[in-house]
Amino acid sequence: MIGTPTPFNTALTDTQTAVEAMLDAYLPHPDGPEAVLFQAMRYAALAGGKRFRPFLVCESARLFGVNTRSALRVAAAVECVHTYSLVHDDLPCMDNDDLRRGQLTVHRKFDEATAVLAGDALLTLAFDIIAGLETHELAEVRIELVRCLAAAAGAHGMVGGQMIDLASEGASIDMGGITRLQQLKTGALIAFSCEAGAILGRGPQDRRHALHAYAHDMGLAFQIADDLLDVEGEAAIVGKATGKDAKAGKATFVSILGVDRARDQARMLSNQAIQHLDLFDEKADLLREAARFVITRPN
Image (tube, rainbow, N blue to C red):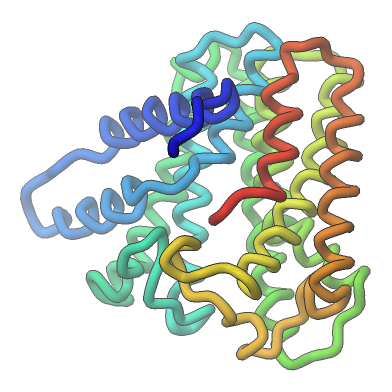
């Protein structure tokens, strides 16, 4: 029996619909030799997914009264960056995956060169969207968004984390090392997604710091849940191959802590994340639900 949708599930679905409509508008169907590039971009960006990071952008923006159009533009930009990272992570020179979001990865559907270029194009599209006047009337706000997203996506953020991840295969890495790896690879973009609303709404520093702290703990809980899904999940439900971390000799929260301790750690981090939202009123309730969702999600 299908249960009654919760406010959180409804909000997540609404964000999915709105962001996908925006991505569809940003990705045309051109003729000519570059048409295959846009086909690959659309294939990757419109393949479904939870759109969880866009949801965090929209909900953090709602705390500061940001208009929906501005929030959705930043949300779409974040999804472009996230999708680019998935396209590149799946390449044979990286994780060499054949399945993503329940369908063939981009390099398997098209070819490796097209996948590289599609990822490149999605990344640069993100900054084109954020820099547009429709994102915010103040140039200083747009510049801050560009600066913070670049930091989250670059060598001191997501890309740096991926480099550490590759280097850690078969190597000995402790709890501190795996935590730093995941703070960069997964947590940096989640942190930007949570802080973006405060940037758009020009919120006070204490509110922005609270959202960053929330994202820090929730992002780690998210990754522990991901590690658990790789061990316990079914590929058909998760939407990608499972059991790959152990086969690759990668250290994860689960390999270091074990399944039970990892699950306990995820719960503790989820609760800590929720506590960081104490200075917000009931408007942050959906973000509180998001912290609970990340440790119970099926994929």
